[in-house]
Length: 176
Image 1 (spheres, one colour):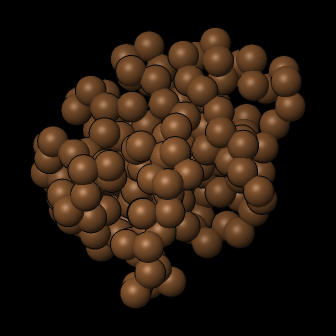
Image 2: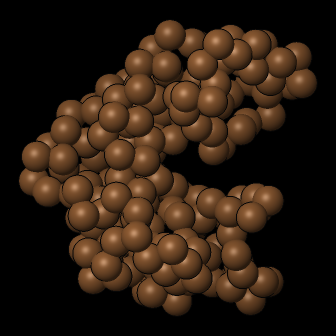
Image 3: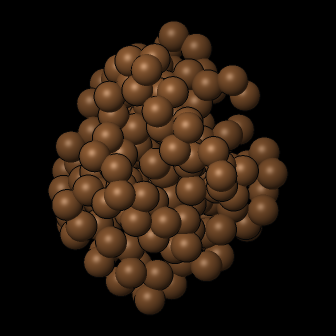
C-alpha cells in the first residue's frame, strides 16, 4: 500500500515520526510520499526521504504560499527536483476556499510549477479547493506533456472525476 500524501515533516510529528513510520509499515504501507508546501517543507521532505528507504518526496509551493514563488524559488525547486528521491512536483494548485493568496497569483504559480513539472518530467500533486474548474482548465493546458499526477483530496463527483481521468490523472479522496 502507498500513502500518496503525507506531511511527516510537520512539527506535530517531532518525537513520534519514527513510531509513525514503523506503524505504517506494520499496517502494510511500503511507500510514503511526503509533500512539500513551500521551500522549507520541500527541503525537509527531501531530507526525510534520504533518511528512510520507504519515504519519497514531492516538492512545490502550495497555493496559500503562491506569493512567495519567484525565480529563485523556481530555481530551488528545480534543484530539489533533481534529487533521486523526489518523485513529483507538489503540492500545487488553486485554493479559493481560504484565498490566502490572490487568485491571479495562485494561477501564475500553478502555471510556473506545471511548466517545471513538464521540464523535469515529474508528475504533479494537485490541490484544488473550491477552484475545480479553474484548476482543471490550467492543468489541461499541460496534461499532454505531463506523466500524469493526482488530484489530492478530490472534491468532485463522478462526472468531474471522469474529466480528471481523461487527462491521465488519478484522484485521491481525503477527509476534508
